[in-house]
Amino acid sequence: MNDLALRPVNANVYSVHSENGTHIGNLKRVGAIWKFKAIGYGAAGEVEPGGGPLTDHHNTEFSEPDAQALSAALRPPASSAPVTVEFAASLRRHVPCPPQTVASGNLRTVLDAALAAAPELAHYVLDDQGHIRKHVAVFINKTMVLDRQNLDRAVAPGDAVLVIQALTGG
Amino acid sequence: MQSLLVASRKGLFVVQGQGAQWAITAHHFAGDPVTQVLVDPRNGDWYAALRMGHFGVKLRKSSDRGAHWAEIAAPAFPTKPTEGPLAQDPTPWNVELVWSLAAGAPAEPGTLWAGCMPAGLFKSEDSGQSWTLNTALWEDPRRLGWFGGGNDYPGMHSVLVDPRDPQHVTIAISCGGVWQTTDGGASWCLTADGMKSDYLPADSAQDPNTQDPHRMVQCAAHPDVLWVQHHCGLYRSTDTGHHWTAIAAPAPSGFGFAVACDPVDPLRAWFVPAQADTHRYAVNGKMVVNRTGDGGASFQTFGQGLPERDAYHLVYRHSLELAPDRQTLAMSSTTGGLWISADAGEHWHCVSKDLPPVAALGWVVR
Image 1 (cartoon, each protein chain N blue to C red):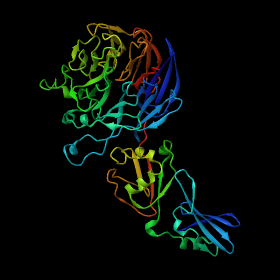
Image 2 (cartoon, rainbow over the protein chains, first blue to last red; image 1 turned 180 degrees about the vertical axis):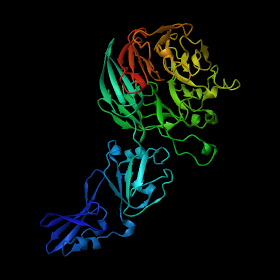
Image 3 (spheres, one colour; image 1 turned 90 degrees about the vertical axis):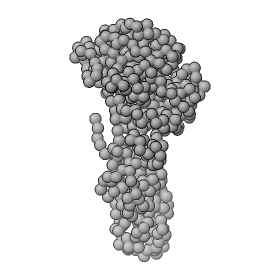
Image 4 (tube, chains in turn red, yellow; image 1 turned 90 degrees about the horizontal axis):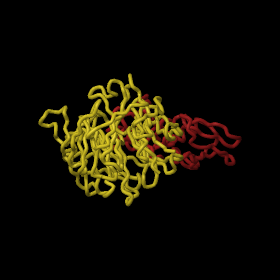
């Protein structure tokens, strides 16, 4: 979340986006100042005013709509930077689940938190023993996780987790 | 008009018609492997077991003849213990395949049974909303002596609920013999006496625990009568499966995978011969069906309408099913063929040779 981007909506509002393009809030003119309004999105895509990864900075005030100033001031504490978890379309065709932002932790806690938004998806990803299915691949920052059983490897703040199917067939 | 469910590697087909007029009228779960189907005779619900190569086994249910499907729970093993005698069980505790589905008694409308691979037996008492592993069978130490028949792990392909008594369930496993319970699954007896595995050393060939029945069926009106197509031949029991009598192999072969029996006439059954043991397709490339009307003492061989040469079809375990009218017989193959007979197997009509590999058939019974 180093470089936030501001996109003008109108003369009094900018939408604020994280480095990967995720909408995380709005910057609204209120009189002579600008207020940051944090925004999150629920499992079904519903808007959660005041939520999202920068919820702790909801209503932070700024003198100008300056992306650099926002980036410096709205930097989340390192321990609370969210992890993004995304499920490939091949999974989402069975159970809808938009990208999730969850707290960092280990792969087990990260997957459990993400799958809490779509519990029906869990047994598509994990087998009866709670291990990653043998034909499902999990990537952390584009590096594939090789150990499907031991899911206690750390997932750091800001990491991106991707869950896809591992093989094609016929 | 009759309706047939065809579970294939690329989805579930509904085939409708009668006589020699049949057509595919629906295709559900297109592209997804369907391994078993059940039409619940108690209320007409349809169940389809899927085996998604990437995402595991799933179960779908329809209460409106396929117009809408809902995902229900699939059987799943509990967490494997890390201590105790089962900690070293080499079998992975993951359901790889739902191989058989059976409805409970009319008096237990929510009861379903699922036989799986690895060979766990699961029971649902809420129409598939949840499943419970039968631990009495799973934790029987003799299970560790079972082995896979054509698959990495033993599989439970046949589950029969006694029409007289819902507490009495008989199951068959490749390769794990025949077992039955009379107390609803609290305890089990191994009942494969009489079966023989010719390919094993003499001193273990008759071990009930390692027999390889390929498929087991029961005469509904005479539940003491069961039939088995075994890896090494045909068997019949007249004492509810406690003892099995070998049937002399009919021409052209006593090898095969499928068996169907008449629900009323305990002497009538059908088998589809294949060339043993490493070939496993129609003998000499000529596809035929054998029918007995005297309990296996003699057979008639029928092939009219079936390919007579260069036919390499294999009719697998759940691919021979008799319709409720007791005359219409459907047969499918792992090569994507589907044939239907309107006269108890004497003449056949080819519905298709272009289907995906077919795993199972199920007639719509209501």
